[in-house]
Amino acid sequence: MRILSFILLFSSLLFFSCKKIINVDLKNAPPVLVIEGMVTNSSPAQVLISKSVSFSADNIFPPVTNAVVSITDMRGNVYSLVQTDPGTYVNSNLLGVPGAKYRLQVVENGNTYTATSTMPLQVNLDAVLASNIIFAGKSIPIVQPQYTDPANVANYYWFIECINRVENKRIFVWDDNLTNGGISTRPLIEPDSTINPGDTITVEMRCIDKPIYQYVRGLQDLQQNAATPANPASNISGGVLGYFSAYTRQRKSVIIPQ
Image 1: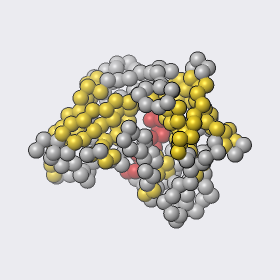
Image 2: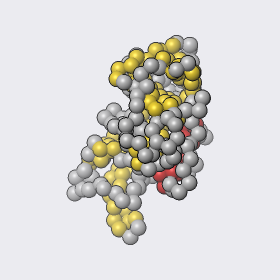
Image 3: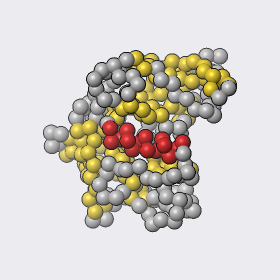
Image 4: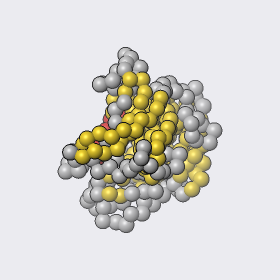
């Protein structure tokens, strides 16, 4: 599913949904290559490649079907990715290992694009708690991922929230400056929450490296203040949009009390 909403074009692959995380210039700019690569510790490696469209164009993002895609691990093993759907390249044999570095290479139309990402060590998602808080003068239901942040290590977290299996488009990403070495129950707050009693909320916790944190944080800033749009700096060489991320992922669910 690809959604263009004024400034942001989101993508985050979940086990059951995805969305584009790309900022698109509102002007009628020429198409730009969009590369989004993911290596996780629990799902096949996947790279999505398409072309951006201008704001005035139809919400159809042409897939790129002629690319040669590979990912190399830190031991020098090269994994070729096979196109399973137009613009979707997959290798089911590549599962990431926490602590390992991965290098993406995409060759398309005579141009080579590369990126590296290191998969952080996994921080365990202990529980997802449900509660109510007073926000903007009203009581709203929220969920709180609970985990123990390792001391003396810089950690970066990206949370994906699904309400009854429908992904919330709000970006939740933060570092551990306020919780280093402690137990975190920082809530996922959305002012216009659509969570209701009886809903099933699933939270995916991603441990990401610093370059991806900076990229997603830039998107979060755009989402909260669309008055000054700018493409967050990609970690992929060659002037393309997108990112390449090696991350750990865990999911837990909770039912909002009646």
